[in-house]
Image (tube, rainbow, N blue to C red; front, side):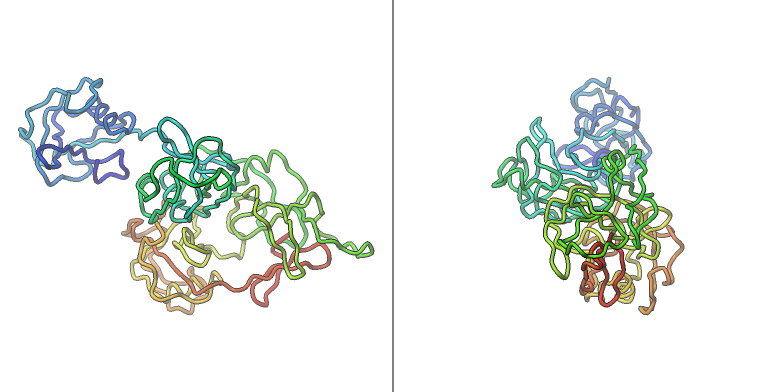
Length: 441
């Protein structure tokens, strides 16, 4: 299958006589397509388009007048004209649209189907993936294969709990642009030096098809900078089904310390609203000038960007200041095309994100993988002094002549220092540089 949107749809080509060639659409129908889809491991047939629907081929036309009954094991078993005999040209090349293969991977024990412990199907069993060398490039491939958009995080250490089956993959080293995890370099199937406490996970920026999100109020607390509701990426069902007090467990205080109004202390958990998501976990170690949150964060609460926060992000990179550029528009995240993109545009992005200046040169297009949503911006032409990317001249929203292999990546010099400290025995104060604000309850 070539020139289609994925490996289970496209122009059908067959190998014969040492060459790839096409199939003529004379007599081509769903019964023929059913056999081809099954032989390809792509499930059933949805459509059998002819007329070079996926573009004309360039080699010989190998098959014509194919007349499968639908039950054959392979296309070569079907009645047809002799190899290479046809009255067709490439404007009649046959195509296929299949339902797709049975799932080869899944995300388990997460808040929804696009976040969780990564499990792969091999030799009739589901198994986990070791986190050795696991990073955002690997997670980006998994998210794309699952139809879950881009990757936001690649947690290891059995973040979503330990699996119970075999550990099937180790030392995955994807580039980030592969179409499926199985195409990434890795150790042979089943060979590893891991334990399930090293199970890898992925957090994608999309929701699975058919997911109906619950609704839940935002965390309660005074002076917080948080959205009123989690509209775009809603909280997981476990949060809405088991609500509890939002609060933090403060460090030991003197018995006579005055009690200021603010978040209630409960069982030692903390909720931190950070623009696009809220992580909830135990706060196990406190310092005078900050807090260290130990590993073991247990839930992720998705929200849309907060009012006044940057409406853009860098994903699938090594840090929040390096990655594929995505912008928020019309209730969705989308990418930016690299047409006319240069360091002046990157400078605006880095400054808006609080990530310093741009590194030279800009990463090559597609360096951080391909996005899966809309391409929102094209022909961006910043002067370099704008306060926001939204202030730069560009083509109208959603108007472009690009594909996702032209998605812009940005790498900034770094991020401003994050200050987190206790204030008045009950508040966490957060800010960058000298600007401190109560953005964390």
